[in-house]
Image (cartoon, each protein chain N blue to C red):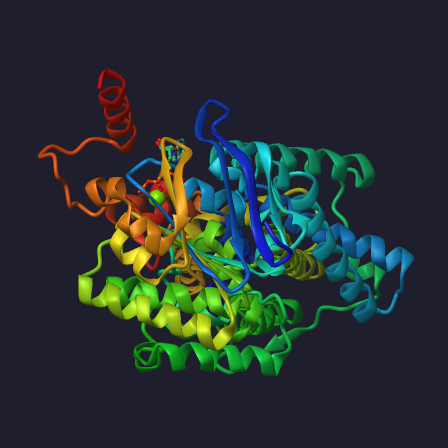
Amino acid sequence: MQLIVNILVLAAIYALISCGYVLVYRVSRVLNLAHGELMMLGGYMLIVTAATISSNPIAAIAGALVLSLMVGGLVYVFLMRKMTGEMVLAAVLATVALGILLRGLVILFWSAQIQYPAQTLALSNPTLNLPGGASISFYSAMLIVATVVVYSTLFAFLRFGSWGIRMRAAGQSPLLAAQRGINLHGVYALAWGLSTLTGSLAGILIALDSGLSQTIVMIGLKAFPAALVGGLDSLVGALAGSLIVAAAEVLMIHYVDPLLADVVPFLVLIGMLVVRPWGLFGTREALDRV
Amino acid sequence: MNSDTMLTVDKLEVVYKRAITAVQGISLSVARGQIVAVIGTNGAGKSTTLRAISGFIGIDDARVTDGSVTFKGQRIDNRPPHTIARLGIALVPEREKVFPNLSIAENLAAPVAARASRSERRRREELVYHFFPRLAELRARIGGLLSGGERQMLAIGSALVCHPELLLIDELSLGLAPVVVEGLMERLVQIRRELDITILLVEQSASVALAISDYGYVLENGRVVLDGDAARLKDHPEIKEFYLGQARAGDRRSYAEIKQYRRSRRWYG
Ligand SMILES: Nc1ncnc2c1ncn2[C@@H]1O[C@H](COP(=O)(O)OP(=O)(O)OP(=O)(O)O)[C@@H](O)[C@H]1O
Ligand SMILES: [Mg+2]
């Protein structure tokens, strides 16, 4: 039972992070390899807002999320926008550089020391007991709730929202989208903003749950195989991929060796690439364009 | 060029990839309410001209390097496509004309209209289904699964949702059966009548285009080689000979060659 809970929590973390990879990839065909760092930045945003805006946790978290949305949009406007129309490789490399830069900045401002924003905000993290003898920490439970809320909202937005439909349209044919009056830069900035927002939400909850340091970038990196296993351009795929990767990882830790934890997602990824290079739910042609 | 001119293209020059000049000094004008045809063979620069009017994006790597495009008194050359679309010019492109993984209904919901009140928007979408009842039957089907004719209907429909004053159509007849083309052409005439829209029509098949047009231009090698009232063009001997396939001489040559040939014949008596 505890095993299932652990799998669900880890899957929720990966899913919440990997939808950011999917959003950006789906509209602009760019792999955002700085997503892990942007997620970490979300955690540090919380430290900033807790210190400056308000010590009320809700207000601090909301402030951090708004900041993340803006950071994502600004990353597009000031960095990725120049890359539009350039080779995809150039754009991907730009995200790699951005990631390294962000890590450097975080060390510069906050040192490599582990931080506990939960303490700053005077929040406790009670353990909830579940039927069947399992237990879950409060913020782990919140991670699952957040994942459910974020995915339902994204599904509804992309399916029924006018700008959601336009984001999908721009992903399928940027030229036709522009010819139909859709401002591509606006759509891309929105995708980056939403992607960073959801990533930050994950970063914030992880930071509240277990503290914040550079190491959480690794979690972001492990969510990437989850997104890719699902096909990278599909939200359903990201959910399924996250579940698969999380299950493999938790079972491996439990039955084989905890030291393998960080390797498992990439093993799953390699296995997947050999069998179905376009992922579980991805479109086959999507991968040619990378 | 009178005050009722909607679009003026003046000595337009378009260069691809900073090296390939595809259009070299085309001038044409479109009066409000008219249907104007641009005809020419493969590679004449027809699509490039329409794309220059409707705007290039970064990946096209194309630029208007000389001349101008003026829409209702406003210069629009080298502006991004979405601003041009919102000014009231909608293009039905030659390729990539619908979003392949969006349903018909979503294809019609995606465009950002020039004038977009919510009720107006709904009226426009209903109007598309009125012009093309076939699309209403297939609302939930995705664009990529449509037949060529249905896809063309959807392309025209999604352009109409943009609320254009000027509709640019690139090769309506491409890959379609003659009876389908005829139906679409009739629909265009109806659309112009009911919506008071101006249409610039690019076609390889001259007979089809000139049949519904008021005025026509003939393009070759990136230049306008002939223009005139559609009725007069239809009877023009050289158009007849080359574009309408009513050749007198057995072999087909380019229009320029024929002209050259005539001229030389005249020269040598
Ligand atoms: N993206 C591009 N890059 C480079 N050259 C191009 C590009 N698109 C078109 N051209 C060139 O510009 C010229 C005009 O092409 P254009 O597509 O405008 O012709 P067209 O009259 O529409 O022909 P068709 O009837 O075959 O559609 C051609 O010589 C073509 O090779
Ligand atoms: Mg063409």
